[in-house]
Length: 513
Image (cartoon, rainbow, N blue to C red; front, side, top):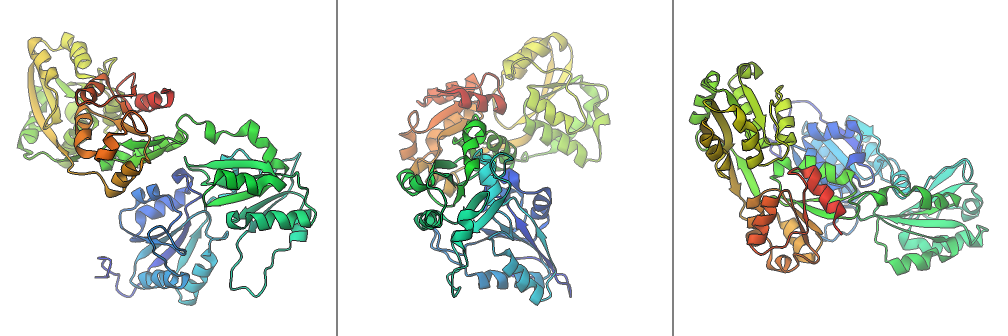
């Protein structure tokens, strides 16, 4: 076994993939890059890589940082090269995940050369470089037929080991197009002074884009001469890019990213960890940041025998009622494990509590016969009660929850069999990084997806965070029942979904004053 717990392939070299992760938005990685993350045995990722990309990884990950970081860790480039080579010689498939593009100011060429020298097979997967990502998300077109027919990418931080600097500011000042300086924030005053000294107009439009393509993006625009002072006043953090040229003027008309409905909002997602990614991707597409805040975990039932018995007797039932996606996955997953498929349901009708549960059924090749207008137990019971007198109903459910549905159906003359297909269990604590963000006040919203989660907030949130509820931290509820549960424990709700879906809850957050 290797030190990573993998079994090496005897006599076979592994392969290293140098993959561009893009500038920050996790959706900007290429299809090939995402595919390789899922296949890798080991992922070594840069400090600037969005951690959400690691949710696609099923293997070991290691963070590398070539410069001093908040954690104090520093890994020289030579050690990174050596780690890549050693892992490949163990027969592993290695992804080296780098911010932006590996070959544009990313030192990917050095890593490729080190691999080639050792005879290690490798492949380079390009990424969206920071310049194009920052410009597009800031509403700046780097080229424009009226303003610029060329664009130059320039380093604002040359290697300290070089005998002399190679930047020709006289040529850059005369360049007939847009200039983009990478890593130029710390040298902004020098860059601006040199360009103006060599003839660039003091009035040239210019911008600095900080933390581009993320919800924390900030943009400062000014005339070239005034840019250093404007950036200093704004206290922009790294990483940042400097854009200089007439194309900066189009930002006012086409600044699309910062107009997204959730731009800048940091939202705690209280779903179980394995269900976090789809909601996180949805929040990112709306301009926000998704923060994992799991408060429950989903597990198998303590005993599968009642479920198996219900599956064996499926033909005895007239209706199967599904009140959650977990119920669908638990029950139908068991059906599939037994070697059966959708044909088992041929003689019965299916009810789903809402559209999201109905979509889960469709993934198993089944369509719901009944979906109530409102996604709650009372609405489902009212909708189906007209059809269940004298009928047998099976309800795949959690080990806990509201019992309104079987009571109403029994009153309508139905026989209801309840089978527990998944266990819903409260977590003892939140992830440490989430706890830290809560204490520091780096979360704007907590999106509560069930009454039990709302009630658990007082138990799981740090005391400092509970004191901020209603001010710097606001609560959103997926349903009126969830809002009531929060209010019962003394927590104010700032936004409630118009229907019991994540889409509606995110819309409520976006519309909240």
